[in-house]
Length: 161
Image 1 (tube, rainbow, N blue to C red):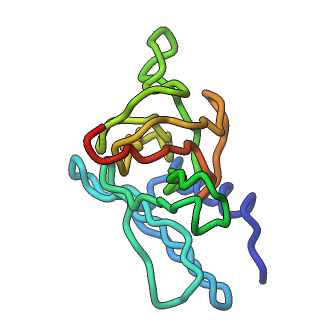
Image 2: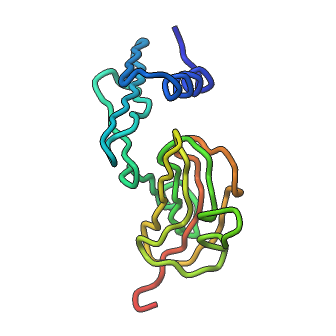
Image 3: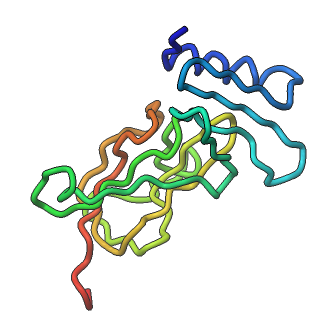
C-alpha cells in the first residue's frame, strides 16, 4: 500500500477531529505517527518518517528547522534558504491587519521571526538562522507549503555589518 501526501493530509485532518490520542500507521518503509497530549506545550503530532525506526515529535515553537546554503544547491549567491519544517499554511504576519514580519531587502538578525507556519492549528514561528538581508521571499501569505519547501532566502551579512 502506497500513501500519497493527500492521503496523509486526510489522516491528519481526521485524527485532529476525533478523540484518539495516538495513531501509528506503517506501510512498507513509511511510518506515519500522530500523537495528541493534553498538557500545554506538549507534542501535538509527529511528522512523516521514511524509515520505520525513526520518528520525531513536533512541539509548538520547537520544530526542526531546515536550512541550507544555496552554494550547496549549486547557486552562486551564497544565500541561506529557509525551508518549511512542516507542511502547513504560511503566514507573513501575525494577523491579517498587521505588517509582514519581513520584506525583501530587510536586514534580519539570527532568531528574528520570518513568518509563521500553521500546522494542525498550531502556529510555529520560523526564525532566521543567520544575520543577513532577505534576498527573496518565495511564498505568499496564505500559501500552503510542503515539508522543506523554500520559504525565504537570506544573504548572510559580512562580518561587522
